[in-house]
Each structure stands twice: as structure tokens, then as C-alpha cells.
Image (cartoon, rainbow, N blue to C red; front, side):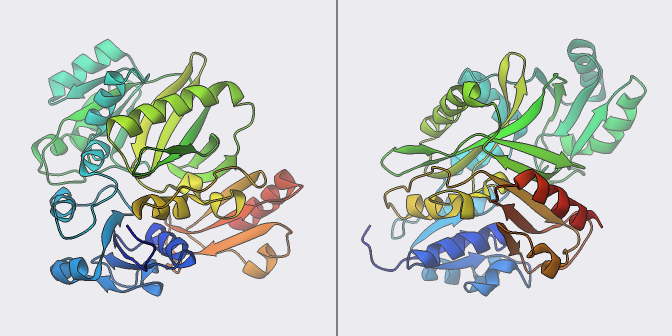
Length: 374
């Protein structure tokens, strides 16, 4: 691919698409978007096509990528098969696995990546069997369609089993749940872990891999609220994390940014899930790394050399959820970078993020956290 201006067709028009477009513009390229929703953040940075305008979206694009893994597989495969266009990155096999929690766990096991114990569940009887084998508490999840804590039920006692099945069981037949496609549920055993971490890596079209440092993640009500980069006291975990994500990238012949979410247990790292895209836990890289995850994804998609993933300065990323803070107050703090997603306020909705890069990260983060919750 030459260095001429390219137009990247992005499936999705949310804040991730917006930040990908910002990175593309920095490199001299353009983006267009495929998105049915109106008033999306990415509309500020390029033309948005509806799904009934797919042919026009294809005509406007030189190569394709996506901002969210729950992209319709049929659409993704049709774009990937276009001989007169650049391919779709990441590959569709990565999407199919990331859209299915059960397939994801099976892949981890095949690659000798440690996971929690799990079982497929297709009936109430099988759920009872799973609770007997895995023990309580356990987490029952839809295998498709869940994110940010959705599509899950924690079973703590035997009396919770029927309630859990009533809430999630329709997903097995396709009569309810988060998708219309029938799919087994997945029961996952509980493990004791000290913290949640993630690693982001990027793989180029010629197979080069660059890793961002392991980061520590904190969640509130199932939604990421804070990321600390780099994770403290994690040097002994880095090799295992890089090995795990490298296996996945190579197995899938992946191109672009991939995220692997992990639990830290007494025995090492336990893989939770992958996200075949730029990730919320990597937003700090915009200011905090030599090359952001967004720019490196664009580089990979366009066949450009990957950028250095080293840290400029330790950072803390805070999600703005539901309500915007007083920006005037926020910006009185040194080393604070605010990103507004141009989305309406709504409970539980990610509408922005803040990256703190200061000599007093802990103190400033405490003050900003109070500001966000006031």
C-alpha cells in the first residue's frame, strides 16, 4: 500500500471510531463510518453511512476496520471478501470468537492459556449439573452479546439457580437475551484474584508485534471506571501476559490492536476475554505513550510500520460515566487531559474520559474522583 491518502471505512461510529479518526487525520488519512444511529461522536470526523447505504460506504473506502466486536458477521465477511478493496482488519475469525464467550474459552484452552473452569449450559438441568461440578458461587453468562456487565447473573445459592435460568435461559433458544441467535450459556467457576489487569498489543501485516505495558483496571457496576498505567508490581506478570496475547495474535493471523483482559491469581494470570479492537483500558496511551493504541491500529490497517509503545509518563485514566464534570474545575489540575465524547448524559453511559499525568497522580485522581461523583 502506498503513502497516498487513504480512506478507512470503520464499522461503528462511537467514541472509539472518533478517536481512530483523530489518529488517522494525524497521519494524513480520512475515515468514513457505517452506523445506523444518529448523532454519533464519529460524525464530527467523517461521513456516516447507514447500513442501507452499504454500497456507498464500500465505494468511499479503501480498507476496512471496526470499533466494536459486536459487528454483524455477515457484513464483516462481505467486506473482507471484496477483491477490489483492501481487506477487513481484524480478520472475521477474531470477531466470531470474540462474539462467543464459549468459543473464546475453548480457544484459550487450545492455546494453553489458563482460564477459570467453565461449562456450556443448554438447559436448567445442565445448569444444576454445572453448579454441582463447579461449585458456588458461579457466574452464568450469555455466550453472545454481553459487555460492560450485561448478560450475567451471579449464582450464590441453590435458590438462585431457577432465577438465573429464568433471566438468561431464553438466550439458549434465541427467544430472548441480548441477541436473537440461539447459543448455549456459559457457567464459570469463581476464582480468588487480587486484581484485574489487561494487556494491549498490536500486530502488523507482516507479523511484527508491539506490546503496551500491563495495566490495572478497576470497575464499578461492571463498567470500567479507572485504569492505572503501568500496573504496579507487575514485572513478574509481563512475560506471561505477552506470551498469552502473542499466541492469540499469531493463531488468528491478526492485524491491528487486540486486548486481553486477565485476572491476577496466586498462580499467575487467568485469561478472561479478548477484545479485537482498540480498548477503553488503552485510552491513556493518547497522551501517555509514544504512540497511541489508536494510531498504531491505523498504522497496522494501512500496512505502515508500527510505532513505539513505550510510556512517556505513568498515567491514570478515569472514565466519565453518566454526567459531565465541571470542566473549569477539572482543568485547574496540572497534567489533566479531558476527552469529551459529544454524547448526551445518561446513567451508566461512558461519555468521556480523563487522563492524569502528574507528579502527584494519586492526589489529583482523588480530587477528580470526588468531582466526578459530586
